[in-house]
Amino acid sequence: MPPAEEYPQVLDTAMVAEMLGMNVQVVRRMAREGQIPAYRLPGGRSFRFFRDEVVDWLKGFPVTADADADEDVSSESEA
Image 1 (cartoon, rainbow, N blue to C red):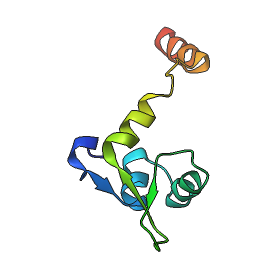
Image 2: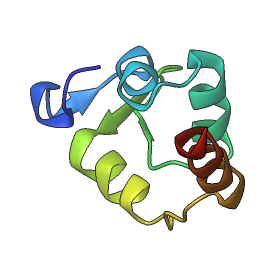
Image 3: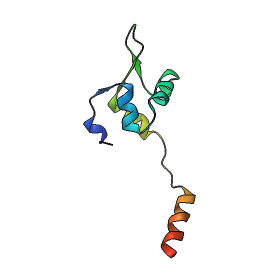
Image 4: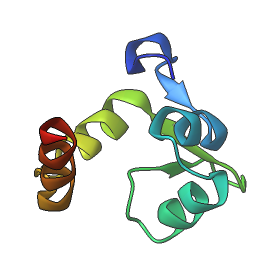
């Protein structure tokens, strides 16, 4: 998956799905429901996304360490 900077400023649904590692249908549903910043041109059915808005939206989610993953790593290094 290329870095976000390698994508154009205006993205279609497939590009956003690739950038985020998600299914295209999930991205479409999220756009319809207003969960991800998206735009429709008048009379159009497809969505367009601004790359920087998608990246900023993604940065709004907290990142936490998974306790189970930490335990798995610890147990593997002890073996």
